[in-house]
Amino acid sequence: MLATGALRAHLIEARLAGTIATLREKSLGRYRLFSARDPRVLLGLDPEREWPVGEVLRLMGRKCGVSVDPRHTSGPDVIDPDRTIAALDGFADRVGEAAARRLPVLLGTGHPHRLLDFYAALADALSSAGCTVLTPAYGWRVDIATRFGVRTYALDYVRGVALMRETGVRGAPGEGGVHTHSPLPVRTALAAAADAGGPLPGLVIGDHGWVCGAGQLGIEAIGLADTDDPALFVGEAEGRVSAVVPLDDAVRSDHYRPLTRYVLNRACLSQ
Image (cartoon, rainbow, N blue to C red; front, side, top):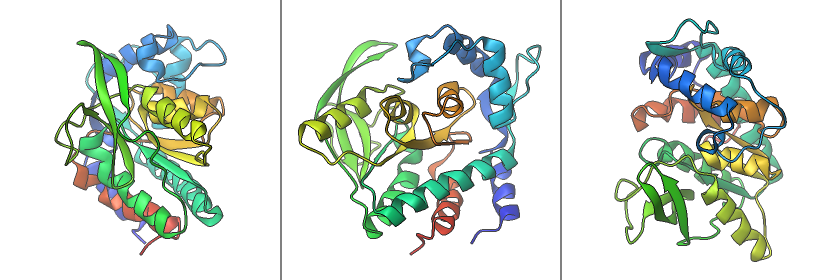
């Protein structure tokens, strides 16, 4: 198993944690929008109570290690690598429990160009352990609001992982795969599974709206989140998301491979 010290060093060197590329001003802007319940940053979560921006900032300090000083308004954000490792342990334990119970699982990402390989390795390992990797609503069209207006995308699955594509495009995830925060894809997938008589997932693994959208509907969900995505951490604080790993979610895809090995080893799913 990858030693914790080696993983910590990798997190810092790859800028998955430590000083990351996400800008402080972007994160603070997202915290303000979340406090105002802007649907663009709620990611499908309906918070149970009010979250003033100061409370959001303090929560992100506890979960990620960002500065809780509101006067710190610019520069690169920071994630405590020890918090990342502790959260990875919790994430891996949930994956291991799903495998042990042979739960049906659904995996989806809003970062197909960065995180597909990470999730695909989990899908493969869970399938080998006897879990059904669900692929409901394959090919269905979903209208998603973007900064360019409403766009229609197609729900696709690559190596067991759901992602959204530009309509009419198939093949590698880089060919038409889109970055999205929307909870509509997971809602569409879950509705299709329910309409077909199941099974429904016992665990959803992903990021952005895949996690918050599933957790809001009462389905256990775990995922990865950057410092500018407070919704997942609020979902965890309110008990609707089971585990969130703080890290930069947009570095090179190969930088996540040591995390994959760490999670699979801890979950006793290494092949």
